[in-house]
Length: 86
Image (cartoon, rainbow, N blue to C red; front, side):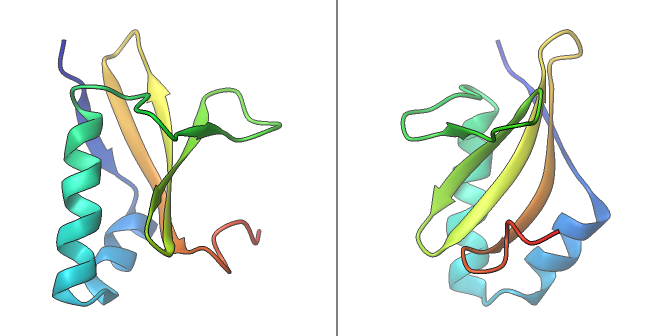
């Protein structure tokens, strides 16, 4: 039961700006979502239908789960101090 992982252009830009160590940690956690889109510690974002937050150190990964398409869209990856700014 594997999910396909897709990245928004914003998430791709963020990954490109991270150091290699941070990028590797974030990508490792994201790859685990393919097997289990709701791991321990994931929090649903209030006011959103299918958006969740994954914590990776000081960084947060916001993603949407689409069970019918078996897909996960990584929407945003940012530092915890700015990730929730609109």
